[in-house]
Image (cartoon, rainbow, N blue to C red):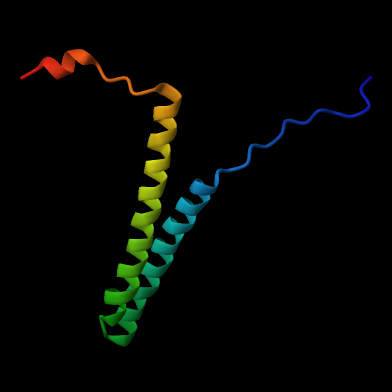
Length: 89
């Protein structure tokens, strides 16, 4: 009989995925708040600054995540470019 049970270890979520989830959550929250503020205050100024800034943050997070995933896939699988595609005119 075992003294200690072996429990499966839970794999930690990558930091880049956490960053992506936080960016998506911020886009949803800020967009909702800005839309409500436009209807309550009757002014579209929140749309100019808040939504623009949040979407810039989200696009940076997406760009970082896709760049990281591309580099990981290249290092894992190599650059498998078929040489026959180069001969096509």
